Image 1: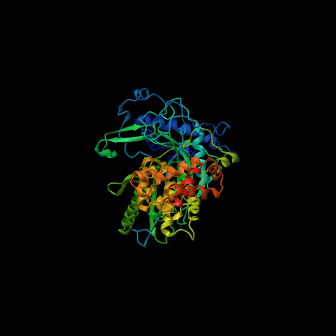
Image 2: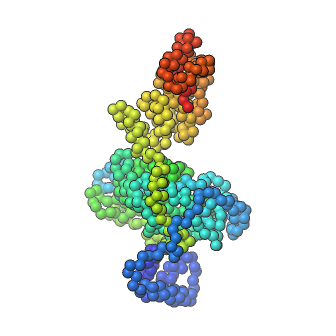
Image 3: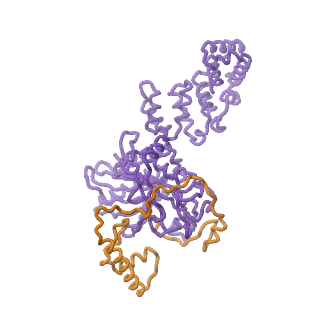
Length: 112
Length: 482
């Protein structure tokens, strides 16, 4: 089974959730899972998807997809500058800083 | 037809243009949207993705996106936001808020100056990423040992404009981006500064045997930041694909990187490594649904678009502009210099002269040209048109005007030693006579034509007949201009 890349509504069929899917999702989230954890989470994720399957089993003919639980649109602010944070405070939160920038390990091949 | 492919192959090109919007603040927070500020000074809990912070959509960004949609003839629709998840430090949240299956603008078109039309699939809102700097080995990511990140740009509003795969040559791709840039600047949505990264282009390129309807396998070339890079990268990539196919090979669908120095593209990411973005609806933002009244108000605020402005300039030429003048008109409008040109023709300068000076001399320094006082430019060309200054002298004075941002052309001519013309003293003489005859001057300003003769006569008398009548008339008009 492939993990659907689409928006809500295109959820995967739970029956087919495989260990390989969990390995894939864990890699995307940069989680280093042990064999035991993979086993555990495959079962847990399957039960979450089973719950979603209960909803999918309903007859939803004529029900419009829900973009948001609140019946509200156009929540906006004016284009007016508000104060930013002090840089010293911001950089003090980072594990590593160089030249007033956040220093991070090199990451290859993931830029969008 | 491509200059490189010959007649056997055809390119199929689709472009994605990312345009930073000219707002005061970011898309979802009140941090300043500014280029070139000290690193990490325009950041707050929202754009740093700190826990508990919530995004609120910027009205100014929405209106600019609507202006772009209107200018491109799109349908402006109810839209929503998604999270695009990926593992890369240019977004501190680990996702980018973008529009996915419900973009604000869909289904437009852009007509290019050569008359060809390129369809617009969509133009959606999203936030920009921070700037990463790779440290070590010449800034190349594969050789870097770590990266430094500045989040000033993270959260800056972007509109991504996606074309249909209807572009057929590198030259047409270039013309599309140039025209789109002029449209974006005309709507006030963007400053169009490609060199500052305000516009960045990704190109989807494939090739197919000429006359074939089936699309070939495409490669996406990322981050082309100038028209020159765009043209070179597309031509290189098409040649690469044709060479591979001619040799019996196949094209792998992949994302490729353009190396400007080496002049070639290289694999950045294969299809197998393609990102799995796990889009899902952004729960912190409600849908956007602009009403008809708001859409109309934004549309009413858009100034004339480049195509219309080119037609207006062309109409100044009796019998129409020559092909060379057409190219000059295109360049002048692209650079936004047509109001300057119009200030000269409105003051009576012949269109041929105004276009030549604008396209040849003024356009060499666009920044200075956009600062140049229009009245100074118009007055100077008036002096050339009436024979007071030669073409060479005019160009010399124009160079000084551009450097200073304006000034009195006659005075500058005198400074430069063009003494025989005594434009400066002529201006002083006219001013003296005007001051001595306030009642006649008031009638002249009110449009009494007889007073022109009165003042020209008085100046002639004062200068012993040495003044140029046209120069005097031009000076009177300049003084009377509001």
